[in-house]
Image 1 (cartoon, helix red, strand yellow):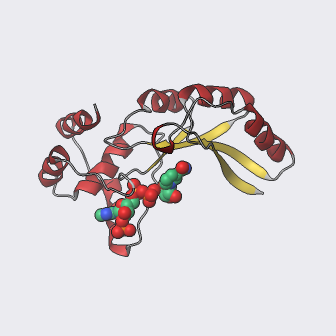
Image 2: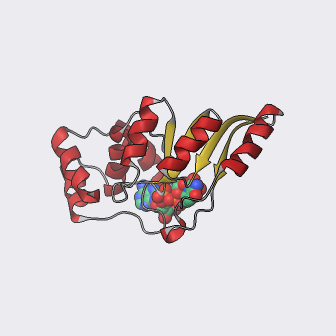
Length: 168
Ligand SMILES: NC(=O)c1ccc[n+]([C@@H]2O[C@H](COP(=O)([O-])OP(=O)(O)OC[C@H]3O[C@@H](n4cnc5c(N)ncnc54)[C@H](OP(=O)(O)O)[C@@H]3O)[C@@H](O)[C@H]2O)c1
């Protein structure tokens, strides 16, 4: 049995993002596999808030994996709704993906807290909501260490307010 399988919807929205395509048929297949004991928990990926609600009516969803980071805040409402339901939100491209995040505001906060800009971007995500789980990608052991250290970085209210402005 596989612990968690994310059903990744193909979308078709901007930049391959989610679109309001029907998801019931694929969800039925996931539920069937769960009932057969092949999948322990079901997650979904690349979904809109409306699709998330449909999926939750059909199955217990344990996690949602969508594009979200300091500069891409389209899922703010979804994150809050999932947090209330105890469902994990796993942002993909947490550092911006192929073009890692950079901005003057981010650099200024990073200088203030004596950390790298990308460490601050990860620390902001962890502070953003308790249901956020991080999967930053890296091919570098040094970056991996930096990214793990970001979990201990403290951001005060002023730093959070300055960072919040980046994506709004
Ligand atoms: N469900 C989906 O549709 C979907 C879509 C995209 C991605 N994902 C998943 O989401 C996860 C993260 O995505 P991702 O890796 O593409 O994007 P990401 O984590 O936002 O960014 C990775 C990029 O940031 C760089 N980086 C990482 N740590 C760094 C550091 N400390 N300092 C400087 N640069 C740093 C990496 O380069 P280096 O290698 O040089 O560190 C790489 O170029 C992956 O597990 C991926 O499989 C899922």
